[in-house]
Amino acid sequence: MKEILRKEIKEKRRKHIKEEQRKKSKEIKEKLLSVKEYREAKTVLFYVSYNGEVFTHEMIKEALKDKKIVVPISNVETQTLCLSILESWDDLEPSSYSILEPKKECIREISIDEIDIVIVPGVAFDLNGNRMGHGKGYYDKLLAKIKTTTIGLCFEFQLVEKIQTESHDKPVDIIITENRTIYCR
Image 1 (cartoon, one colour):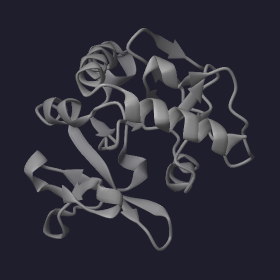
Image 2 (tube, rainbow, N blue to C red):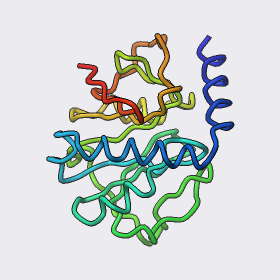
Image 3 (tube, rainbow, N blue to C red):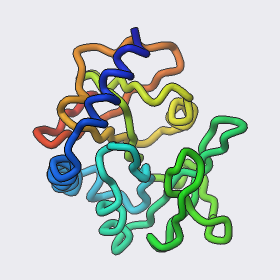
């Protein structure tokens, strides 16, 4: 069931017109900037978008001006994420899964405990904050360690009625789409 839903949403994302995706991503960015938890955060973990996700590149570039930005680095062998401070957008290059990650010489690891807020990707979310990722478990492992606010970014069409969860799944606290901000807990 999860795989069918994952495939359906990815297909919708793939067909999403790039101009429309950018427009909706800008609307999501404006909503994110107005969320109290984000405004008050000093250190923000952002995912670097790829493959039709809510476009975070402009969000990150803007946030670099007044926040400490952290981005994930995929460890393909352990299917975990390590976290690195991002000093400049130019410090990124395509890496695992063609996702932009810090160049080796720019990696400055940081502990998850130093993060104030986490911006989380997802293939789909439900209104209770449950998320479905790409199926590899990278973010599930990371979210299991997080004690701070988590915000999922998605397009309205990525919201579904219910996502089947497992014991290791951790819901996000807030979901932001181009149409609304949903406080899940």
